[in-house]
Image 1: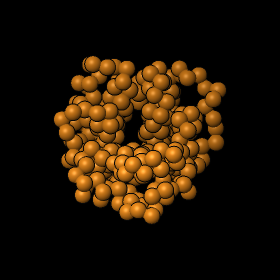
Image 2: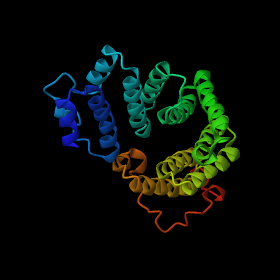
Image 3: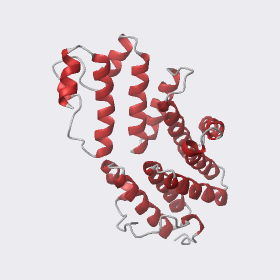
Length: 261
């Protein structure tokens, strides 16, 4: 809020202010409010954008703040499909990482793995596959301690791995498991993500009706998450149907798709 920002400025708590502005910038982007500049309240100072925020964190030696900025930019870049930027942020975060495991590290490992598999399919680089498989290894160990929090993420990573290896039947099973686990555990944004990635997979496989249904379901999940900015992505431009009437327990993964045109 404006009062919080003004208080931070008056008390010269720039660390908290910069963290807040970085997080707020990510939220506004996801929410579709690109015209609102979270850095505008500090325009008379030295921090006017992400670059200035990082420069402040670096010069003051605030590594946790640097990681937070990298993490926020990773989330923003990934969800909007800017995969090269997402990987850049993931690697910078990892280089500044510590042994402890804050919640942002779990999210970053998840998004870095998904980004790596996407890049592996587009660039055929063994390094990306290695990073993706490393993320799977981490989530397999974490899922032992909390299936509720980690199973859906593990399933989606495994689906993307199978996709890369051309094991399409196994990939479909894992995508479906990721969707259902996300729904049951009430991670609506990750349900949307799993539907979006499964929909992209179906499009490449020529299963066009399934692709449209999955993208509609992803769009509805993102609406519930209030990430209206994501609805402007090209992949949703031709998605006119709604999944409001679809049984949430429907086993999409077992449907037969269309033949390639």
